[in-house]
Amino acid sequence: MKNPKALLFHAALAQVAFVSLANADVIASTNFDGRTLTEVVIANDTATGLNWTVNGVADPGDMTASNANEGGLILFDAQPDVKNIFAPGINTGNGNTFWTTAVRLTVLPGASVTLTDITFDNWSISGGQVQNVNRRSDFTFTVLNPSGETVATAEIVDSLSGTGVGVPTETATFETPVPLTAPGTYILGIKGGDFAGDNETGNHTAIDNLSINGITGGGSGLTITDIVCDKEAGSLSLTWNSTPGTIYAVKVSSDMMDWDADLDDGIEGDDGETTTAVFDLAEVNLDDVDKAFFRVEVQTGD
Image (cartoon, rainbow, N blue to C red; front, side):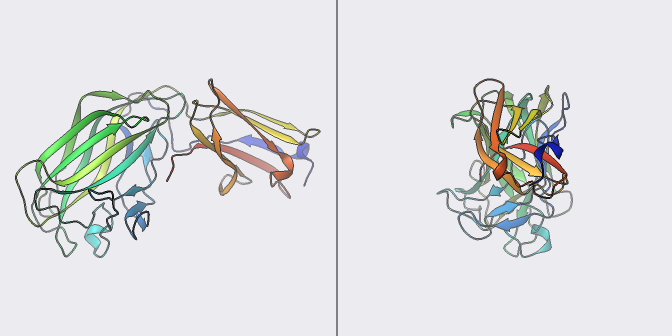
């Protein structure tokens, strides 16, 4: 290992996707373009690589399609119409069948986030995995706080999807704004199908261009505020602004491009407004490195 004093240590902005923007319209959004599929319960039940746009929250990560019994549902992927949307493979046309999914919302330290509405494109998919049917669908959006309690709901009943031209963009608005003030991760549960209004037959309910909207303000996201390298003690200390109980990962990079190396991915936030983690220099791989960059991320789970 090189002499640690000869290394240049840098703190990288912890959440590069987060930009502080007062009164932002979008909290988290994805158009599902280029999404890939993986397995959580069954093969191809989870949309990954969603390239979320975020303001004030950590990247929500993947979305898994589940049935009423929390079993996995395969996401349609066979035809071009369904490759860039979220289309669970379940016929929701018997009046009591639906799918569910969830979006994780973890507010970044120093930011404030309030939800107001959700917008999305409503698609109906035929058994041939193409968008050529004009069917009614129902949607319910439920906000759960970090303790699992329901704090708000919004719904849309009997939305007609169109036939591929002019697919409608729907807006589900919460009766009152929903502030995300508790520490930890909120869950936005999404239920789609045919369960609330007139019975329809023979459709597969899907969504695209999902946008979770509201107001953000304050803060600059996660920021490493102090780096101390103690050669004699053989230790490296990092301090960042944090929320008690939130789980963080600390990463290291030599070029700010490859962030695959974790120093620790299970650090729980200290009481108070900052967390300090101390690492053994002997375990920090800095061999043949002239510069080292560090980044802290909120862990949002699987």
